[in-house]
Image (cartoon, rainbow, N blue to C red; front, side):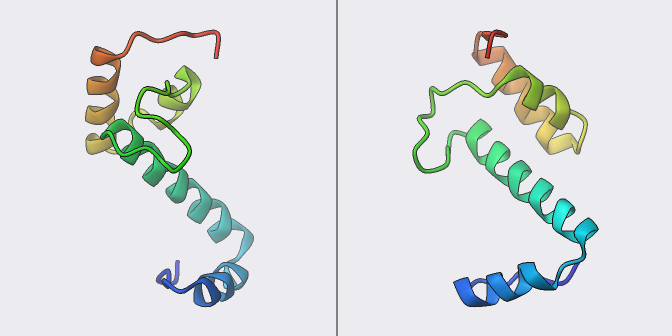
Length: 85
């Protein structure tokens, strides 16, 4: 993928330049960044550190890389999961 730029206009142009496959990968990486931050205690705006991550999201992300898998294991060890979410 081409490098991601920082200003809003550059980012907009960047997103428009991606192929559909690159756009899907960029969205996945953005979601994984947000998930990693939440698991590390830095939730996205509008979310509380106490908000539970849905079990399905954890299962989908588990195994993506060793760092994320370690964060998920730590998260599961410290949070009781409500599977009804």
